[in-house]
Amino acid sequence: MLSAVLLFAAAVNAQTPQAPPVPRTPPVPPTPRVAPVAPSFPGQTTDTELRVAAERNVNLKFCISEGTLKINGWDRNEVRIFARSGRKFGIRVLERSPESGNATWIWATPTAIEGQTAANRGECLSGETVEMDVPHGATLNFQGRSATTSVDSVHKVSLKIVEGNISLRNITGGISATALQGDLIVSNSSGSVSLDSTTGNVIAYGVKPLETSDLLKVKTNSGSIMLQRIGHRQIEANSITGSLQFEGGFLVGGIYNFKTSNGAIRMLVPENGSCTVSAAYGFGSFNAAIPVETVTENVTPGGKIVVARIGSGELCNVSLTTSSGRIQIARLEPKN
Image 1: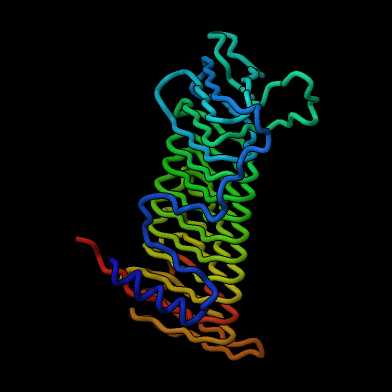
Image 2: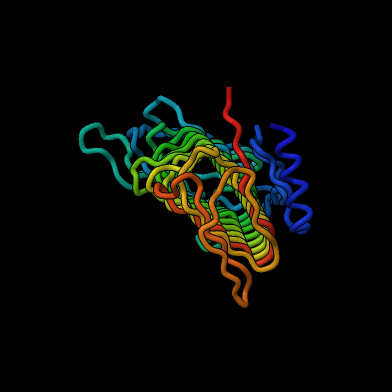
């Protein structure tokens, strides 16, 4: 496994030296590229912990201006929020269950300080560390400025972080995540998934759909994309400057689109699959280490387009496009 990763990294460096290397299966979120900003309100920091009874499918909204954010799902019908050395905050219950009286929709926001206007107070949590424990069925909707973020074992997540890496694990009902300056790592999650990074790598592994129509959409402007053990039949992966790697089997009825403007594309797939592959490249090459049958080869002013079949080619369609870089189909060895 390690040797395969090293070979891929060497190939990427040869094709696109500006693209950072991508770890195969990182055990922990990487070190944030942007250090958390020190609190900008000296003399007003405190440790705050609040709890509120909540339904298992509670919706939680908030924003965080700075700090390290850790969110974990638990079995209690309760939301707990703790901020260390940050603004004092409160929990506003926006809706309650008419049966139990527990919160179904809550908003965490800083509380007023004497002499401070609402405009100066802002609406974002902040602290050295902000920790949240929420029911497993919770839906989270939040954004942040400079925050290293990890979320584990909740139902659904929608977030946008300006600076900082994002790690999402065991999200069962879908993900929409944006990291403007940071890496995105998603593992062991399901549903419709949309991942977007402006300057960072995107890694997804052990991700599957809830419904056949669920889409996995991955995009980065400057970074590499690595997809491993993906169960989605519809995948769109795009990088402007960076390599793309896919490792796994193609599924019946699958539609796979991989595109980079400047970078290599490497597909590690079983040789007993059945797909039609369209490989288009400007400056680069196309080669396969598994048996493929070339159907057509067309030379255009912009490069070359090769259409080939793996097996009968009837069960799925794969589109591979790079303006500058090598396209390679390699053999995925079966695991014992």
